Length: 255
Image 1 (cartoon, rainbow, N blue to C red):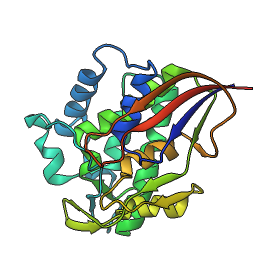
Image 2 (image 1 turned 135 degrees about the vertical axis):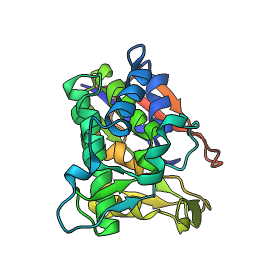
Image 3 (image 1 turned 45 degrees about the horizontal axis):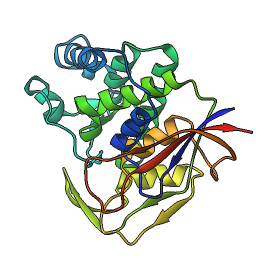
Image 4 (image 1 turned 90 degrees about the horizontal axis):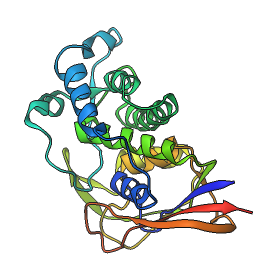
């Protein structure tokens, strides 16, 4: 049995998972990111999908701002609309459903976003129909989650296992100002899954909503590292120095 194991003692974020999978040899098809960027531009920015059509009558919109705080690049200027108004979960599902990847990868990406959406809806007392995203609705966040799903699909693993997940403490600054760690969306995910979490004496965020959402949405089981032969090992790094190093990631052939 081919198992993917992620050691989360230094936290988890989208960049860690993506760079870790890349270190193991996983990659997306040529032009994937550009195709995704154009799809997001058409569907969300240029009217192929109307966000307002999917709101429940009588309910207000809720914009969710707790997102992946590990550094990403600057968004393209033509996608500024996504930042000022937020992006609905329904709009993101539309994008993922039309993404240039396999049905299996689409399902994984949609499960990841559903995990995040349910957490954000719980935090903001919204529903999946009314919840909106800011940070995790950015073009780069959508592309990263789709990319992780496509990379995982290309690896053909039979099972995914993760260690206990370590987060920091204190506070972190985001769109709504300074908020406590774990951020609300992460806390909501922690409360609704059976993972083991540990708080480290590190005064910053080690676990981001997109990172934890990826773990849960990918179907990772929290358990000790499986016994077996290590086929490959890599290290995935986040875009921000937390003083803790990267994420060790393995492919193990279980005995």
